Image 1 (tube, one colour):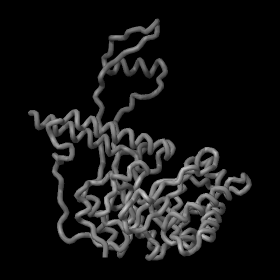
Image 2 (cartoon, rainbow, N blue to C red):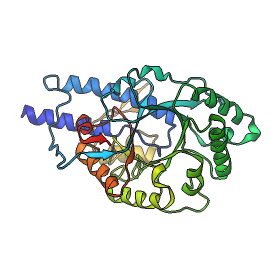
Image 3 (tube, rainbow, N blue to C red):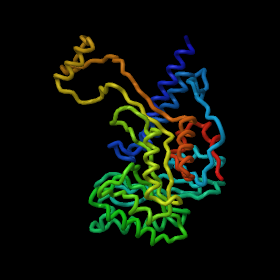
Image 4 (cartoon, rainbow, N blue to C red):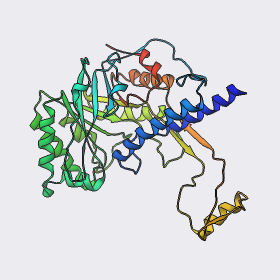
Length: 364
């Protein structure tokens, strides 16, 4: 009985942790997501230790399938590491390119903090600074020259590039009318940092050509050395439950990408994270009728008053559906890309993975 209770507790904690956003389609800002992600991970680690104090917190109690066959062999492996989480990367991981996330454009159109790559002592691969900009209005202000912000941002990026092997632009909220501004922004950075520095871009997954797409693969790939396709967030917090990167969808993404992006420039992004959904959400503002309906549907008759204001407390069962990634699923996805002759992949993000995955990856 105790073992059953501990199993349920661990699986529930795992499902909750899979809901932590590594992805990019949620309406909350990227910066807010990052802060919440770190806080939630720390809370989950504490809760796991408290709930199952007599069990190794890294123990896997579900049917954890192990891949079969040979290791996955890749030419380039890109891995994202977040500031504040540098300790989650170790030099024995088979990673050729480390993406340091991130130097973010703040609400004043400035990049005030540049992460220090010296924190990765002993790492012999390339280190790339990831530059981010959250929010559509802020991105428009940065990309459109008329606001006088663009040149200052580019100047900061150019100065920062002297500390790094490369620069990566990860602007995920480019407004529809700023497609041309985005491309000239990339062109100017490419020119300013020179060809001796790597220049890459992370852009959303596509399964077909979209009219007037600000992330049109054909227009962007000539401007950079590598294009990282963020092949995840097929399902997100506001969608129906499902894998953040189902195998069929990933195959459609890579098939289309290969028709547009040269093989040498194509890097397929893979998720280490998952998501969870609940069938009912009670954390919201309610009008009287909806509140009364909830009380009636759940047979809640005990209502108290706080200085005349009614309130209640109750426990309502909620069905949770969680999709997550483990070694088997990640290796399967890697082999899918390997079968398509793609030998460059990128992981969002290091620290979220099933630790046993790294045994199945090697660099040629």
